[in-house]
Amino acid sequence: MTAPAVPVSDNDDNPRLTFQLRLYIAGQTEKSVAAISNLGRICETYLAGRYSLEVIDLREAPHLAIRDQILAIPTLVRRLPSPIKKIIGDLSNEERVLVGLDIQSRERDVFLMDPKTCSKFLFCHAIVPKSAAGSLGLYFTSMTS
Image (cartoon, rainbow, N blue to C red; front, side):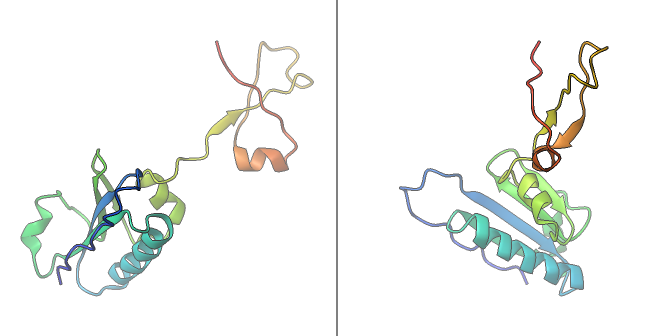
């Protein structure tokens, strides 16, 4: 069941990157079906009109695994934009897929300094995600040398 690539939008007014994706599966296993569904949702939500997707069933065309060095399935391969990236699994963790495809960057770790508790040291820090820092009542300082 090697599906044809879904065409990319011809809208030249869109300066954003176009993603060329290949999803390698093996038949209609639970993980393969989940990967197709999850990837379809992610692409339509975050890449609408900016991607092409080719689904390759390795049961029907096992020789195609060689070109992208596929060792496990399901595997998503991002051919473009460069560099090539691979994500193995059913793609159910949306944040990891978005980060893996470079659609979304990881929440940056921030360094926190509290002079009340760190007064004896040149500096001290804790690493927490930005999203958690605000709810903990923490404040930020930059760590430049």
